Image (cartoon, rainbow, N blue to C red; front, side, top):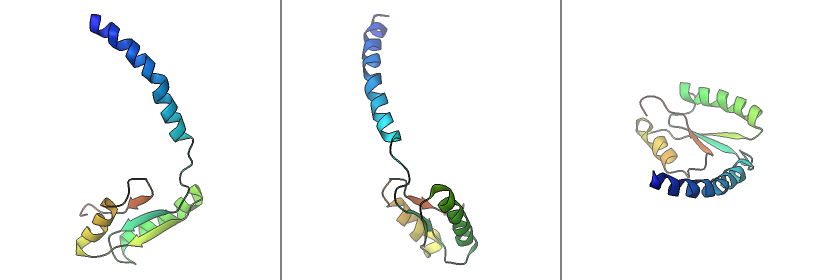
Amino acid sequence: MKTRRNVLPAILATLPLAFGIVSGAVAQTYPNKPVRVIVPFPAGGNADILARILGQKMTESLGQQIVVDNRAGAAGIIGAQAAAKSPPDGYTLFMGTTGT
């Protein structure tokens, strides 16, 4: 019981700081630059057509350009590696299948 009383004030003291950080992140607009969708298959295939249809709808709803980037080869591994090595900023999406 004694430990719980000591920890509670520390938790309550950090809450305003945590909410300040979160509110700053929420204030940013997303997306503010084009979003890239990596498709690990050649252009004209089913995954590419689906990515382009979804990209068009996303462009209309987000108001930002969606770029479809075909990275074919090695059964989808080249595209998957490109997506895995991209910065984790939310501006690179991966259009894979269960195989990739």
